[in-house]
Length: 466
Image (cartoon, rainbow, N blue to C red; front, side, top):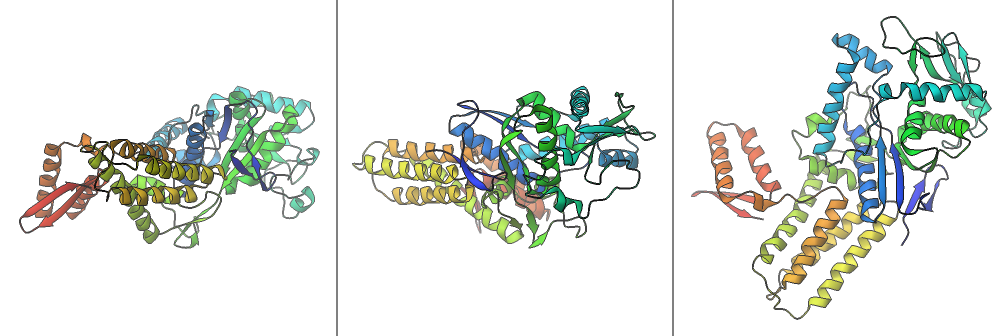
């Protein structure tokens, strides 16, 4: 079976054939670190973390790079507003980013390059573009000659003639053509800046990813990913810069995830409906948020609402309960049955259909459907009088393997000893006596996440492993 990837560049699914057999180079545009991330930022992080995990599951050695933009107009404005140094501001929000995405089950990239650590690489890149006639200096700024690059618009499927409509030169810009975009910005007063052949300044946004991707992954990368909003102009400009500089394709496969809507409305600053990850994960289990994000194919828009998140929580609980029931039965099971091969084959069929689903452009929605089929099979099998430890072990290992691909490993409920459970229940009772219902609910949710189900009765609170 061959993985098929929908390539934004060609607008069709293509067989995935990396440049080097068994190895994958992957670059995903990271955040501009001037604030906490919202769930729109979190979606590409979860999507491409899952792509990476699945490629590794299929046996590929993946080198994964995702950058931090740590110098930018927004960063400078935020630092000035707070009376803070830009490096202090960005360090704080980089740490906050890692805290948020770690809670969402995302692994760190192999390399997280920062723009401020690659200024020399960016200057060198720009100089080559100038030498080749693709860029020019103007009053301390450096601009890219968009019309000189014949392939401009091939990612977004727009011609330069179409793009001219609506293009204009902003106040303060001194460029030759409205379509030209900035590679280097001359320094303004009291702004962070670096020395360059064109004077003090700092990089433009688009050049940063081109330079960092080349340094860490070479002239051509296998997969370049990001949100749909980055396809134009950011990724279009990356292609123009990189391919003009190297004369080679910048990326073989371009992947873009869809937008997030909030209660059926597009998330936007004008509507003030941004949902910040560091806030929502105080109310919703981060694993539920990840499961919710993966319940829809990555290229499709996804609607964020309380009802849909609650549905995701219920679905994840069904899977967790089935897994814990298998584990519990396994503790007291032996090879007593006579249908081992039949059940092993059923589990294999489920695993194979999961792989088929994920091979089809990383269709996590269909992959999750196969995990629910595994839940159904497990529940049917557990009704058998004579269950076999080998079958139960295979159910358990398959649950773990497939959920690990989705970045949703099971918590080990056995790590929570009976004494620890009783202590948490006592704390919950004390919280209820003090009418601290928020803490009471937190403890219940914590126990449920670990497979511990509570039942409040007239005789007190009872618990059992789910």
